[in-house]
Length: 169
Image 1 (cartoon, one colour):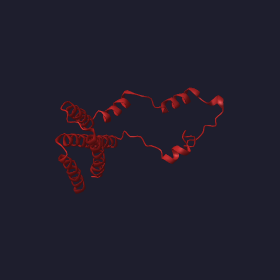
Image 2 (cartoon, one colour):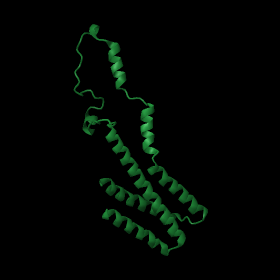
Image 3 (cartoon, helix red, strand yellow):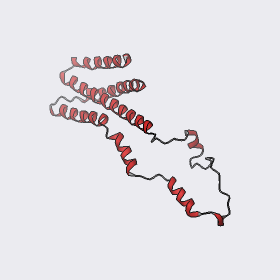
């Protein structure tokens, strides 16, 4: 928690240092910094919430190792026994049904699962702040891009550090 507070304090002091240039530069820097900081933190928290809910509901899939995916991308050597019965004794309709069941298709449940992570308020509200802040700066003729763009980068870096520390806890 101390690292989060000290990181935010140092970043805010950097933003306040821009106040000596002009009030427009300070406004641009402050809005850009807060926008990108909130977007990164909000996205991290939404992702963490989605992962925790999937773990609690046991709805996650057990993934194969990356090395297994590289060596055997089509799961040819997955350890299942091969059926060596004569062709006359095989029930091809059952085999086709089993293979079709293994194929993953888009369903309402999978669409709902994907939308739940992207439509979280943790993600939407920071983007609304980013858009409205930019429009407000532009309409009031306070937007100075030479201060706005580096402040976006500063917010991204600080947001990454803060969200990494917050997720640990």
